[in-house]
Image (cartoon, rainbow, N blue to C red; front, side, top):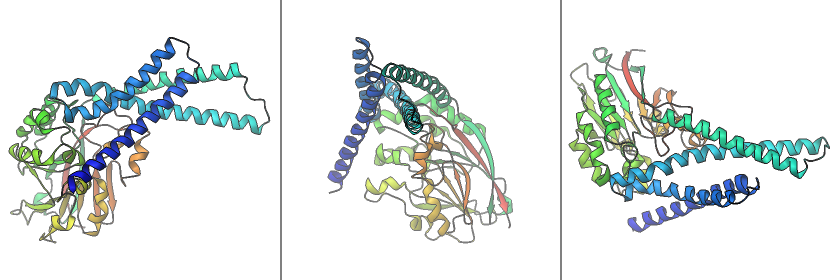
Length: 397
């Protein structure tokens, strides 16, 4: 029963996504081709471009899962770049429609005559040219930001109950690397080198490490075996681990020296004043993909010592509320990419309570990393990729 149900959900989502994609490109054609009365043969070329660009997006999304590694990379880049530009263009066109509506309402209220057809056409063409030009400029800047190396962000977090002997413990958090078709072995190797240069006591990966099939992506992750930390390298699953074939990736991650915490916890530095506990829960999306998938905080904390502080790894920030009820000290998350491309930041906020930075719910703190890589479009606007170096400070208050 599970497999047909999963296949049905996938097909339903895929058809829905195609309908949205077709609708968006039809809107582009209406606003940029039909309404501007583009003459032949440019009209034909523009129509063909709309169709080709619409087709490039699903090809890019499916490439890492269906194609051999070299082909997947070539197939993914064009559609991913267009996906980001498409979102920016959509936002800009919607803004011009609002502007035109306000202009029309203003003329109607003031009883001024509406614009004559020639003036309306001139305005439509001017707005279309402006939108495309602004989209190209902002898109180019966004690509530059998306492909820049992550910054190292240093933060200090006071941890109540942390033994004084462990004050100064450093954790390097990386998340949402999405190693796959557009971020290959060189990207992973660079991240490993930069993490090791920080000499952390522990490395944590809060999900979405990989993207794509195990067979095509395995070689890109080999450098992760070089991660070095006194207390080890730990990870929790993200939604993309499930999409990419978790059962194949788990043994490989273990071989690379990465301990995946699947609704469980471990005691850290127990010989130094009692130590602290590191817990990890599965990603929410696992519930619909694996029979035993999904987060189980009660299981992750089962048998823990209430006198020790607990740091919880959760891919999605929405774990903060059950974590706060359970008395967790600190939650480390990712998933949001900080919104990745403004103004679609606001859509991410509809699903997640926090997008990035340090927050508090009750006595529980939450740090949301904006991500170390990117998903899909190699673009960022309004946020920056980071490697986070967290220094734990004892707090006796």
